[in-house]
Length: 243
Length: 302
Image (cartoon, rainbow over all chains, first blue to last red):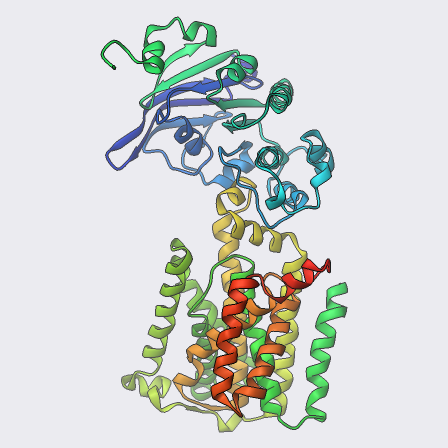
């Protein structure tokens, strides 16, 4: 098998415990370059925990994470950013007192982007932020702060982008725009792992989804097939004994 | 470079010229010490957001490091000064585990650490090493003119450092860490390392200030150089002027320490009233200091 066809990210048997609660209980899946994988599941099923581990916020308690053939489990965030992994946050986390431009400049300066042509203005412009470049990030509305999160992540030149509920709270026009943007990124070869509750949005951008429940994957395949799977239906809608 | 010309050169030149027209040199010297300390607080609090309630610990460590070099090794003052400042940096390194704490917990732990150092230094059983509670006398190297000149150099270096932080990507990274350490990590910044560098630079400034202070006054007690007043003043001056800027802490020292000397010495009872009201008013209405007022008027404050 040539390296081009081996998956970019392989997660195997990932475990994370918070006290007595197993947030992840042996999660496994893989992701190829240029692919958009949707990670769905009910609240508390471990989606964000998974992203937090892959981006270095938490260290895993078991299992392995391989990125481009290298074990990256437990590395601190800045080293993962240098390795080519980045993310957005469910609640955007810009550097509030810095200007929009400085927010991106700093990621270019410290992110060790392999593509040295990355240009702040072009990046801001592609995400509709150029007009606000010299305002403090605190003055942006929350939809634009989300775009700034994305701009900062892209400034580091990621090859794996973890997208945590980017679509929540956006209006239909913004949704349309961001869906096209994410597809463009995938076309350019970036692998995307998208956590989302909006199934329409997931269906629009992904070919494949992983459905999680109680820290494990219970289904892998297309969104259309997912809802013919009795286990998935039970998790989302409640089984006969759930009432 | 513009900031060096507009801020560093005028401030240093002012303190270089004033002794020839104003006779209270000790007061001028204290102004310089407080500008250094307020800028030192600025480096760690203004740029990275950690409020060091025990900041005076570094000042005292520098003063004692300097003095013990002079007393025990007969070191010349200009050699004892960097070594004394090194003592403050070592103390800073020793305290790096405090960064596991955040917010008020960090501040309280830092305060406790400074008090612990004071207790060790003033322990009567260590009299043969530190002179214990009986204090230090450095009459052999007493040279106020040279000490004043050295303080000028330390002041220039301190201002130079803050100007660098204000204009460099390293300073911007520190501010990013202050705003959101998690996002800073994702932007590729080594949060732990950069924060410790800022902390040690801040300790170095206070250590140099403490060493040159010991040299200038040459007779002091442990309570003098570990007095919590240094911490409080430095923090209030930096906050009053405005953190994460070059001019803010300077403005804070000039106005508040000036007021302290004008009102505080002659009528201390009014001074405390004015000072207290000023601090309350600031925290309530101007939490980002005087410079935020200037910014509101559209001025770009360096």
